[in-house]
Length: 157
Image 1 (tube, rainbow, N blue to C red):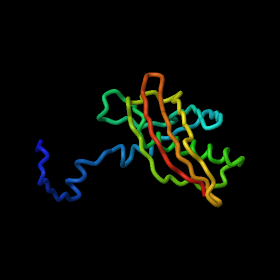
Image 2 (image 1 turned 90 degrees about the vertical axis):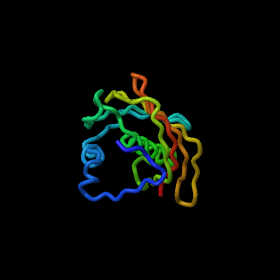
Image 3 (image 1 turned 30 degrees about the vertical axis):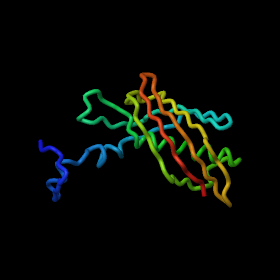
């Protein structure tokens, strides 16, 4: 395998690109689905339990299923939408959620499909005209010690 070089240059065509394509990103991602089983909101804290109802297992991961950052960001985003609506006193989704920025860090792979614990801490939330804008920190964990941490900024319009 060639070593990275400061003057690295490559021009890849469709066949070359195909050799590097991730089956997960092109097809497997569409196979992943999740369900939020319960949500508890107390002040600036939201706690939830999530189950992966359908998963994709990579052929290159010998240990089998692992939760991806993509799915974690999806269900955390949904939880922030729930929190924002409840905070605004709404009883159903009537606003569009917009992700402004996000970061996520995998401390240890999450390998359990059910009982995934999510904690979202609201760092700030405020009304700006007819919109809500908030900043949130989150942790996603499983019983085996898997953990994601992250932060996102979002608004409801």
